[in-house]
Structure formats: C-alpha cells, structure tokens
Length: 209
Image 1 (cartoon, one colour):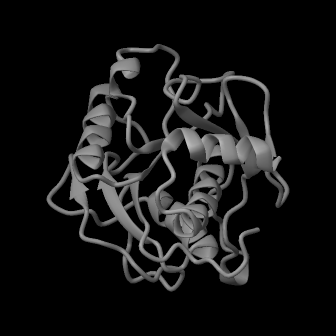
Image 2 (tube, rainbow, N blue to C red; image 1 turned 45 degrees about the vertical axis):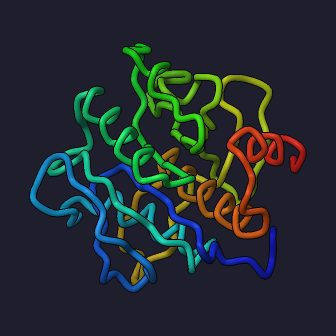
C-alpha cells in the first residue's frame, strides 16, 4: 500500500516507554521528551517494538519518543494527557498512544485539532478511552497482515503483529503493535499528501477499506 513512499519528512510522536535509538530495526529517532525520567531510553522494550513496526512501513519517518512508562506499562491518565499536549505543542502531525482506560477522565478536552491521535483499543475490555472518542483513530489488532475499516468507535483493524526477531525471541503483539502499523501507513500517506488534515486522513482510511 502506497508503494514508493517511506514517510520522508513526517514526524511521529510515540507516547510509550521510550525508544532504544540504536536498535537495528530503527533508522530515524529524535531526542524526544520524558515525563517520568531523565531520558527517553526504553527499559521495557515496548516502545522500541512499536517504533520498529513504524519504520518497517515508513523507514524515513522521524520518530519522536515521548516517555510515559518507565519500568511497567501503566501511568496516570493525566500524565498521558500531558504527553499528548507536549506533542501538539511541537506541531507533530501523528501521535501514537498505546493506552486505554475505562473512563473518559477529561480526554475529550485533549483531542488535538491539527494532529491525528492514533490510540489503541483496550486489550481486556471493549473499546477504551481515548480510542473511542470522535476525532481519534481507535485501532485494534488482528493476527493477520491486513487493514480493515470498522463501523464503530474503534475505526480500524490493523496487524497486531511485531517485526520478527532472530531466534524466535519473545516479542510484543496485539493492539499496541496495531498502532505502529497504522502510524507507519499514515506516515506514507502524509508524505504523499503532506497537507492532509486529521479529518482527511480518517476519511482516506475509511475509503481505503
């Protein structure tokens, strides 16, 4: 899909556990920002795995890590909202968030107007905030290399699969990886159509399938 495009010139804020910039799957990683430590190094591997998926699709996109997880994959909702606000302040057009809560908790006031927030559906219950909110691209993973538009609050099915690692080493999979696939695809689209608004990107996804 969108062959010939590699995300050149597109920045992606990845709100997660940080990124290991020296990982062999990665090509362009910016300095980024951490809300939980002095650096954006990834001690869990989760953010790095998502970044690897993004660069599989869009090797020339620039990933900007925004660290909200340090030693475990949980954080206060307010911290995640602060991370989204930081990415918006940097005018980053694509923002990825692999976090979902049961309550709205003020998310509606945090949805960016000029950036597209791509958020994972919850793994253990239906939906999840902010993924189900209007103006957010909610994504859920499937165990196949396919994309499919959905008619509901969660608008996209995407591959929930990681990039392969040597020697069958364990890796992350599921809705978080689907966010990475969606971001990589959208980076290609933004390279092709750099003036696309969030609404136009969402419309393109719906029309594509």
